[in-house]
Length: 610
Ligand SMILES: [Zn+2]
Image 1 (cartoon, rainbow, N blue to C red):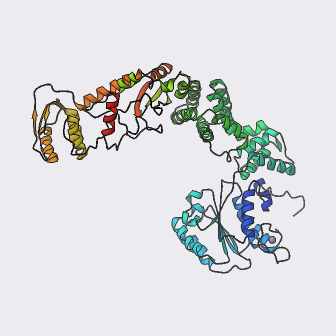
Image 2 (image 1 turned 30 degrees about the horizontal axis):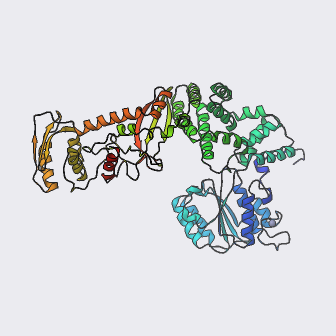
Image 3 (image 1 turned 180 degrees about the vertical axis):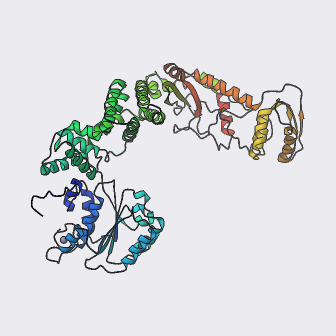
């Protein structure tokens, strides 16, 4: 071969594969832990390396294999984290031809036979090295039976055998395997570190660049060294080794997360124009609307984590200020944006023209961004949080408790109870451009009574010995005896005319089923142990329980709509309406309305109100 013959081009990611732990960038914690384990002679039989793609798992595995088998130049070295790289085992492992170091890609060898092959080999001593080492890449891809076969070996591994597993999806590796491994997590490499790494390589390779270009590549790589080097490779080839930021951006042709961040920031600032202009630019470069929405959702998720006080360690540096700023918007606004985006994602993916759908989504989001959240309004209203506590007349009016139906609402603020409070939560949902405010008025609770509310028709689990004094008692009894259909029919079709122990007189609705009366007499007699006579009257009778309930719901809704706080919210959000009325417990959460076995507390609440 003549010296002028062009050398085969080696991609940068391969050329700059780290040859020592010192050259492994961004994994200082891992190296420290490994070297501690080595010093204290606590190296396990099996290691599992986990982290995102292209972060150095396979490099680490090979380095570890070298370190375990390196004998040094004089042939007398022991295990080390600084393999010499020149001894026979080191060079053989680097070239991938050492007989005792086997690399298996589980993605292509997933069967139980492969695992059996391994196990059969495990029995033999290493041919020439100190340890026989199995490197199993993408170990999560192994089949269940392969894992089982492997597990037996891991339980009692021969002295001179080591396993090094690498995986991007640690959750798919069975716990039984994991519990027998030392686990090492490789971290995402920060954008700053990647940028410095790229800088060094550019110098060595004679690639000129501006600052934006390297930062763009470092950011696009999202913490993966291999991705960073692949993008650099591609960009250098495209620009003949003269990297310029704009060209790199164009080449990437996808919304950099930084650009998506700009769109989101502008949108949540209510600045639709800037957001749309930014999107138009991205779109011109080939970015797809759906991809951008996914990005925006992802960013909102991270910002919400920040708002909730989560650790920022995994954020990419140059995004940190932007995401932190978004986090400051607060969970209420971020949650509202999340819901709109989630719905928008569906719209964009189904729309005949996704670009138009995306633009509509941005406009809607920006429009809503300027609207206060219900809690903002609450802050602005003078004395709002106590508005209905200070006005007991409202509370009394709204308390539409009825002993007859025992459908009551614990809406009973006590004048001197400092715990009595009213909070408010709400959410907006964008619906085809039409704004709909869902306002949840939460009601002060009279602790310690569990709450119940009329519109939700909670089941009443009364003790069956309770005397029957109303139609509701009978319906409740049927329900307690698991006769749900009968209970429903009693509520819907019976109008009370008269009731004495052992005698019930009712009028029927037009649609009442024929056997209802006979069934009722039979069951009442059976349940109470007393003979019951049920007669049908021609008279009009009272309202059915269902009608009463519906009426109460309307009354309650009207009363709540008249409270100062809700009235203000309804005025400030034109077109908004009360969607649901729920009681809250002392922690400010909505109560589960079911499973309220004791009706007594509500009765007390009613007495106090009256
Ligand atoms: Zn060596």
